[in-house]
Length: 105
Image (cartoon, rainbow, N blue to C red; front, side):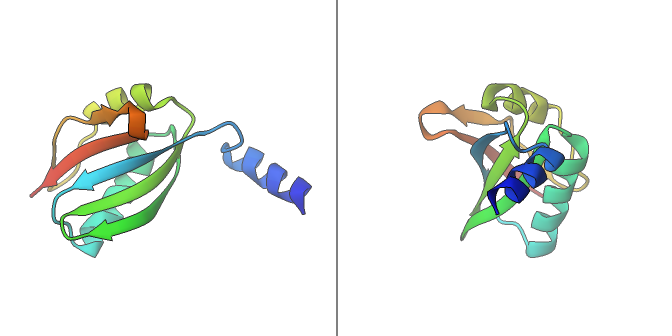
C-alpha cells in the first residue's frame, strides 16, 4: 500500500533523495565491486542507496540515491579513499545526470 511505501522511504531518508548514475570505469571483480559499494556507503553518509544497474566489460553503472545534489556529492567523492584501489577525480556529466569515476588497482 502507498502509505507503507511512503513511510518506509521516509525512514530510509530517501523520500526527498536525488537520484543519479555513478559510472565506474575500470575492470573490477565482483568482490572488489561489493567492497567499493560498502565503502561508498560507509564513507559518504549522504548516499542512501546504491544499486547495480549495468555491467559491461570495463564499466559498472549504479543508480545512487543521495540526500545531496550531484555536484555536491561529486565534491565529497573527491575525498573518498579506498583500500587497494585508485580512483580518478569524479567527472560530472550533468546532461546525463551521471558521475564518472575511473578505478584501477
